[in-house]
Length: 187
Image (cartoon, rainbow, N blue to C red; front, top):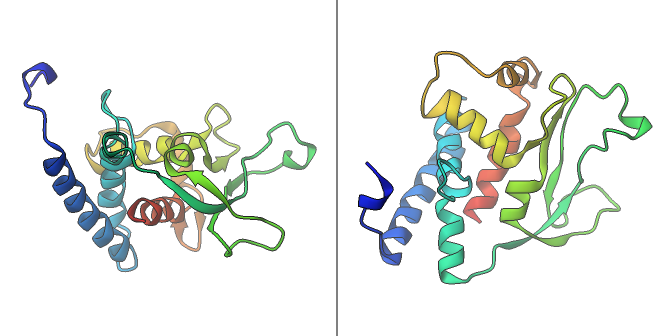
């Protein structure tokens, strides 16, 4: 159906949709402890809430703009991988850390970050085998949701295949990153 023939939803309808998405996201996070299959619904829910998809901004961002509310949260951020730094040579993979205020390693200070900026611009994971891609949180969520969640694509993107080949504690590298993104989104 063409976007021009759709009836625009009201703010109360969008808030009800947000409440429903939060419920599904919360259930997916709790389900991850039982079975990794919940990652699919978690990624699809995150994409709906915080990712641009088919030219439509995420539901949470549209509501934040419409209601003119702040999306800042206190975090301690580890930054991103400086690919030109000598200490980065030989680095194969890594999760770029985010912590709630006061939960990071000593020496880091918490600051207020826009959740939208974190999702759209901050690097979530580093994989040297995929040199051509900076995996922002949004890119990672979209890749998982689009190929392993909503569509169950016939073939997988080569980047996703490489990501799935790295396991830490019997989990793909991106599982903790997506789970934390979901927690921050619920916050």
